[in-house]
Image (tube, rainbow, N blue to C red; front, side, top):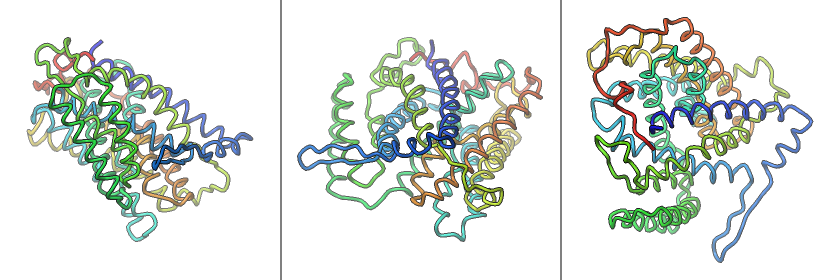
Length: 409
């Protein structure tokens, strides 16, 4: 199975599992099991080895520990796509790249319209700016052949760029007070991993062992620990295989292939179960109009679709890029609406932006409403559109040509 098909398959299937676990979390959080659910998430686990000790809640182990593996996979995908994949040529980046920027800026602006004057909540401006690729591809998979593969690749490219932007945003805006000693050790470990790469070491175990130590000291440094996963991904060796993608078996490909299933079917669903639990007790219709849930929901539902669709449509009309192969304007709009599904990364950023429990709960409300509305609108639009879009605006660039971009894992 090619890397592209494997990626789409795993992400779509993982999206179903994520939907189920998020729904289960909501049920449990509003059942007699709610007390035990929140108690387990708050239970502390830790260890001490010499001068190094950690004592974190189960929720933090999931968000800071397991999600580092998720970010490692994201980093591997970004590196492969930029160096040897869909995004390896500037011509392939124009349409999804600029559309992704529109889809990041518009939701942030809408959120700030409601929260700019509030010092407690304006730090959540990045919450509605991310697309949950697992959820979105899972919804697309439900539509079968009604959506051309070119648009699935378009959505994937946008989500990859969203993830890259989210990584930069987390590094710049959501980094706590720095501890220079731990940061210096982290830098030394990273340089050691770079040296391994330069010396041609292709075995994975030195990188994984170094990455574990890197995660520990990045956590201690004040930089968010999940960024250690991204840093590790950047030094895992990639051997390019132009014209022979079926032979792509470098260390990066091996690690990416090994991580797809556990991340899609275990780590992300577990994150969803741990973070989607929201008690509806005390929530009224009036509370849905508070600045945070309103800004998040409208940012995802309105900002995402308008930012992506209007930017992409303008680029096509200006002649800077072609419409994705066999896709209509209506289908492009439907996919733009699906990009408003912002579950995983939106909840993750919400946990970084806020420390107050009520603001985190309001973030969950906004994410759930905005994502659900975006999913319903996207499905409705795509079902109403002719499944066989016009062919006159065919794209010659490989980004949207299914036969030319596939690459085995």
